[in-house]
Image (cartoon, rainbow, N blue to C red; front, side, top):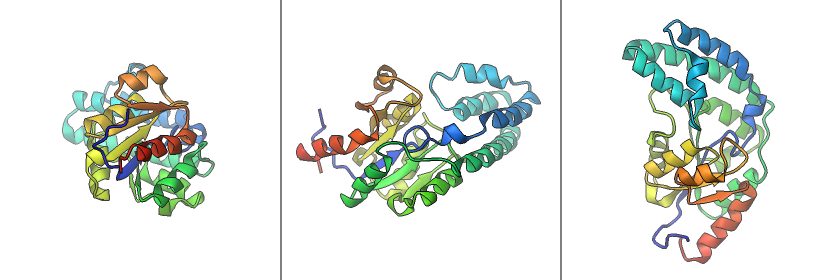
Length: 235
């Protein structure tokens, strides 16, 4: 049921597996090899850490392990190097990335109905912006909050909170849309509603368990959900 006290001011989308197929084109093996070498110097087993990530983003669990094992100064240096490796391979992959079904229509619909759009992603902001530029969608997306060394990654709420602040909307007027439990958990922790999208990291049950109020097959169903929202008088 649509909560009748909420006005919709913004949609915050995850990027990979939600709006675009970036991960399909990224050389993750090259990234893992480079990051594994960095972490191995500290005695950490990257593959073992990733096996236990339970739907959270790879870098979120690696960050947690790094900060538990090293001093803040050392962790910061290693993290910056790891992020640089990821940004490089993601930007290369962005040159071949395509939008997923319903993504362009969802962004256009939000823009034409006065709903602000942002992206909250564990990918590099530069990679997401390359795809938006190639697809001529930069004007539809007001804010991109990507992976940085100063913000905890999802499922922490910080990236969602920053995006809402930059858009000038209250968390209670915002919906987070994503394919992973971390997306849903982060949005809910920020005081937002969460919408899950299938086809990525998790099935319907895990997305609902993580706090999603709705789970869509893909973004082609989002306009129908928002039309239902408006029909219920939530605007």
